[in-house]
View 1 (cartoon, rainbow, N blue to C red):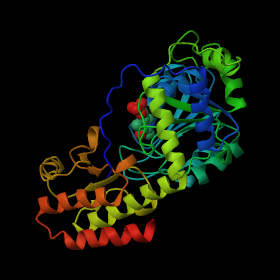
View 2 (view 1 turned 135 degrees about the vertical axis):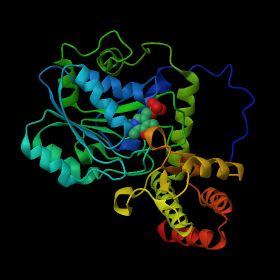
View 3 (view 1 turned 180 degrees about the vertical axis):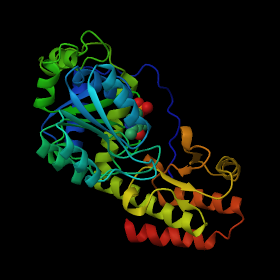
View 4 (view 1 turned 90 degrees about the vertical axis):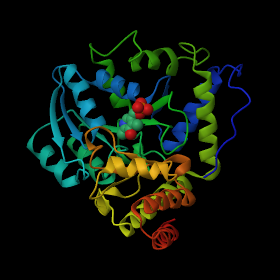
Length: 363
Ligand SMILES: *Cc1c(COP(=O)(O)O)cnc(C)c1O
């Protein structure tokens, strides 16, 4: 994996003005292939997600919130806090939700809004948005997608999905900064927010303030002081992705996931998510027979840099290889597998051989 030299200084950078933000929003719209508004948020993605929930949620809104990991659960709590009536569709975290799961709930009730996470960085599952989106569109509900962990690892296509809000960040597969994020917002979603008397105003969570004070202005002045460091880094990350090609970035992640899974199997570790629910994603989770915490600690002592325990309640049972961003790279995956193999006392040649073969067949 390429490492980057420490820059001489991060101080005294040129201040990012309106044109720098316009450039970032245009590059993000291009990345998403969307004609909807794309809005840069001067905060990490979790803020953009909360702003979406608080902007769209209100008493009388009937929301279907799909929970396949911790972020979806949090989104449901934000919606509920607005007084929205939230129906939760939760599946065990070792699998994705299926289109059939969603269809069954949609058939049973009428919804104004359906929210779900595309790919889960915590568990390594990926929900089949291409199959689920048409169901939501046919139902007439607003579709809200958290694509923070999928952008750059999977095709994220708001317009093809008919998605009303898609939240993204650059800190996962795009290998960019974590301190700014973005959303695409459809005219329908704007109308729903504008018609919501409880939607935040004069608040860090106010998307409507950003619409009126920035997007619908002549964009000659920013609403507040931009985070120059983060916005500059975002523009650099997007330029790097554009140079490599988004398709290539996605292929690297898909190949890293497949190679990791092949190597883990060869090591006697079980990929935690079934093949057809994992697809390409930014992490590969695995379960073993012994203590995962001990295995992770030992693997890191043996040189692993991207092997960690899964977060939260999964930590004791599930480890992961975070082959995300620049780490979605064959040499990095091989290094991680070798460290795990050394730790487990397994011969590593068959492991790296399986991973190499799978990488070559997938990329
Ligand atoms: C990482 C992530 C987020 C939030 O990112 P922050 O950097 O913590 O704001 C949201 N949703 C998903 C699915 C993620 O993986």
